[in-house]
Amino acid sequence: PRTPIAAAPFTISEPGSYYLTTNLIAATGNIITITTNNITLDLNGFALMGGSTASYGVMVPNFQTNIVIRNGHVTGFGFYGIYAANVYGGRFERLLVRDNTYVGLMAGRAGIVSDCQALFNGGDGILAASYMAVVNCSAYNNKAVGIHVHETRSRIENNHMVSNGCGIKVETSGNLIIHNSVANSVTNNYSVASGNLFGPVVNSSTIATNSNPHANYDY
Image (cartoon, rainbow, N blue to C red; front, side):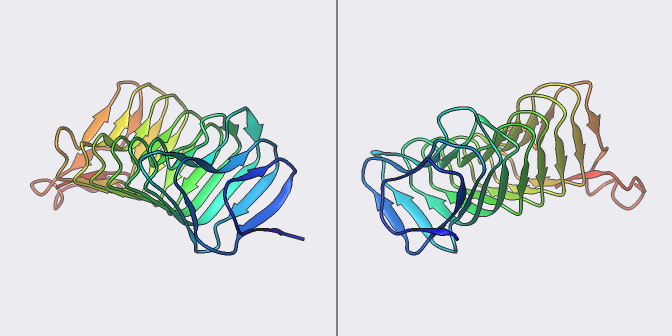
């Protein structure tokens, strides 16, 4: 059976499936802390809401594996909306992370971020490490980077970035970047290190003549 979560703060310390039954609000600290492996957390369409003195919506402080977080909003936290830098084999899907002071979603390694939106975060919208797939996501008006990958062997595909500090930033080699569209960034639409498999960037002057099926778009 699934375990309901109806009040904050809440620590998940036993493997299993958990779901929200209402919106949760925190003035300080974290709303949900995960300290074990093999967890599915379904926000169930509800929101985790914090203020400037609330730390994290969801915090995974230690090395954990097989963490799924899905289906809800995480907004207004003083640090990160979701901090999962220590997670291997995570899945983050159908999340809206917005108005967090630093990063909206910090994913870990060997996982998937899909169908997520990151808006108005003070740092990066989505930040991932290595062996990640970041697909079908959108980021708007994040002050640092819309999607930021800082390690290797990740796939960044079919995402849409508008009006971020930088649209897509990939710091190291060995990643795949294809089928993305980026517009109106403050600095660079794309900042991609050498040694990556990076589809050609097509803009309005070349779109009519470019036939590469793996192109990225810049407009």
